Length: 126
Image (cartoon, rainbow, N blue to C red; front, side, top):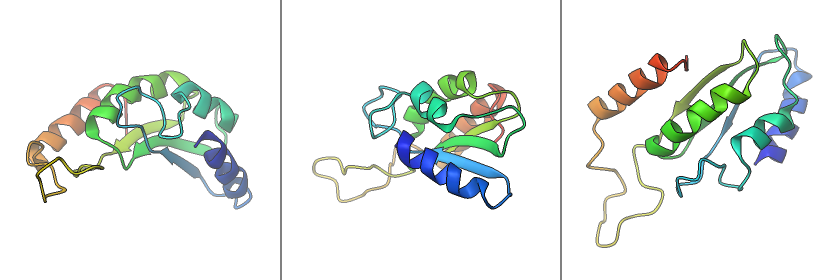
């Protein structure tokens, strides 16, 4: 959630080390976090500053399609100098009816590499 990420950032800042933040997105293709907040709300809760301690914001543990939808919103919301990116699931968060396989047969490693190249071409660096 936006609140959990903000609390983690406050604690991580105390280390003096660079901070990376990652959120999980809803699979409903709304472009919002699982907790319901928009990307803009999540970023706003971090109170980011250019050249501040938060060096990266990204998404993980969600579908590649959800990440593709949300990355442009994230890039628009973070200040200059904050890197963006994603690390998508290769599995389903909910198994398909009649399937015992949690992994997606319709999404190959080559598909994932192509998608990552698209994210990079659009400005993400992680």
